[in-house]
Length: 200
Image (cartoon, rainbow, N blue to C red; front, side, top):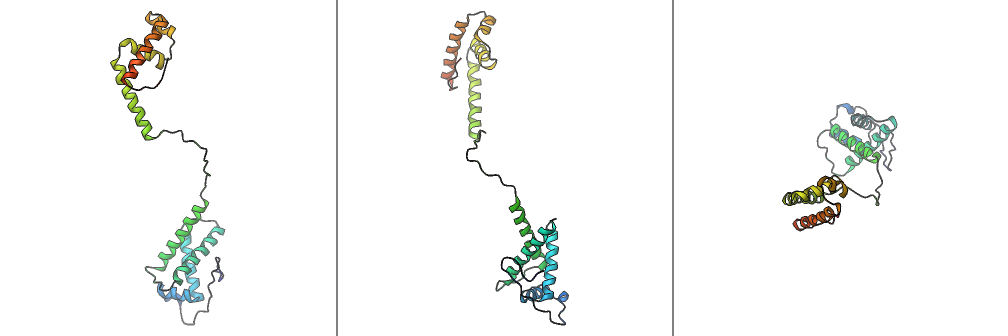
């Protein structure tokens, strides 16, 4: 780990005192030596941080080194705060920091789509769908209440798209008479419910 870290942070290393084997100290003592810039402690912390970064997921070599430095700087900031007390193990703290930095990198690389203010949402909302369902239920009730001839004309013109000539030939009536009759049927239906201004 380079003594010069990005973000303007620099860990000043000091030579380890002879007879201070860093491998035999507990995590709190290791953090204290790391804060003091002890070379052996810095190497030990870097080793733990590298293991934590590797456990955070596969990364290209360049990203791995960047993430290692970011995570180490973050750890340095944590332990450098006055009154810092290590709760739990140094490894668990290193893993939490490494995962947080890894998530930050993923978020920064997420594919973003620019919002289009002119984009219309043509989908209907729940209230519109409910209102349409109620209108259709009302239409079914109203159609069941009108005369048989009206039902045949409404179904023929609006559902089957048939002409007045085709309906007149089937019912043996003049097309003009059926047009007038359908107009009256629709007036009755509109009186029973609001079905809009659909006209033949």
